[in-house]
Image 1 (cartoon, rainbow, N blue to C red):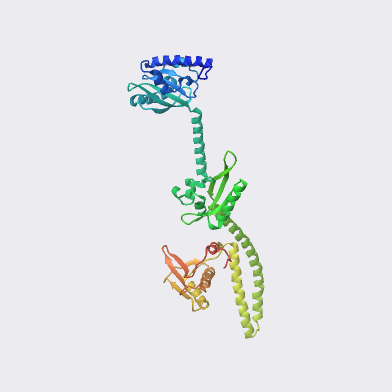
Image 2: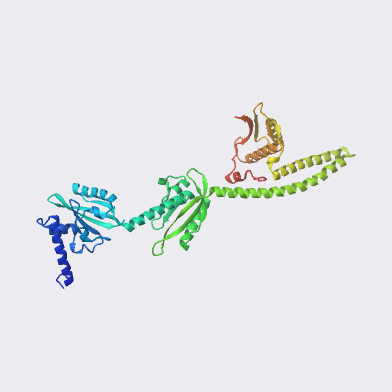
Amino acid sequence: MGRDGSTGDDLARIRALEAELRELRARVGLASATPDARIEEVLGDVRILELVPEFITIVDRELRIVYLNRARGAYSNAALIGATVEALMPTEEAARVRVAYGEVLSTGESREVEFRSREGAEFIARLVPVHDGGAVVFIVAVAREVTEARAAERALRASEARLRLALRSTGMGTWSWSTETNRVEWDETLCRMYGLTFAEAPRDPGDYLALILDEDRAVLERRVERALAEGTLYDFEHRIRRADGAERWLLEIGDIVRDGDGKIIGMMGGALDVTEHHDLQHRTSEAQKLEALGRLTSGLAHNFNNVLGVILPSVELARRGADPQTTARLDDIAHATERAAEMVRELLLFARGAGKQARKQLDLGELARRTVSICRATFGPAIALELEVEPELPPVAASANQLEQVLLNLLLNARDALDGAGTTAPRVTVRVHTQPGGVVALSVEDNGPGMDEATRARVFEPFFTT
């Protein structure tokens, strides 16, 4: 073993490499300019050039190969020494690579270039000029094969493109949360769901939770705590408040993120706006309830009508020969029975569908006057009841009984809302006027506290009352 720790075989190999280096110096014309120091400064320890994974090539000013640490594929070093760099690549690549070499020769500055070999392998090469007396005398190219890396990059880009297309087609927005940095990341689709720009998106869980509806926030926090404890995040729905104030329903679909040791380091997933689905479910449920109520109403009305059919003929028979006091009582019974019969007809109309009721031409202004006159006695002096009717209104096709009932209910509800509400100068105003297109409008307005959200959601339900 030598003093430097090398074996006899190593010494023989070093001597062979030194001989090759002397030949290399002669080829590049540096024999008179301390070439040992110059080349070793550029190439490093030339004894291990054949062992490094990179391909190291030296070319002269005519781009002829004067040194190659090893060849690739079917080529040999001997076959490539003296050939130009174009021998390593297909024709379409050669012109572009020649330009890159030319820039290094003219500027004296290093640069990188990518190219493909004739076999289709892909490389990134660093072109380093070596100067002698101020001129570039040769170029050292250190090339690294990136075929597999580039293939993986292309596959990843294709996969990401497919994923983006899939996300766009579903309308899903994506999110992630790191428990290590406590940072939240949103994509632009999710930002649009919340009515925010990408710059306005929340960056920490606190800002995100502030966008969740108050009633759902605590439930969401418990779900996150449970997911971190159990290691499983289940799908769930919650409501949000958009930047414009609109309330929306979102379906969250996600999973736990772990590091290489299995430790939980965050969550990631996507969100879908399912507001329309919720609205459809609600409407379907309401339609089913109305259908069941209609069937029940129809049966009750039919049976009740049979009872009324017995009462009215009996009242007519009792009137014969009755004294005046009894007749007056019987008249009250008949009036109540006729009113009940009218209610039965309205129930049947509801059960069959309001579109099947008969409509007649009527004066909406006169109907409003008659209904307001009936209500004045029930309002009392504390609440003002005002009526504004535009003259010469065109007739409207409607059911007088139903319109009277609607207006009567609106007025009585307005009275009840104002009673005890503490409103200064409580007032109910009924207006009947025409609008463009010959439309006659009937409006009832009061200056009371109004309805809350829960009441507004049910205001058109049959038989709903507060």
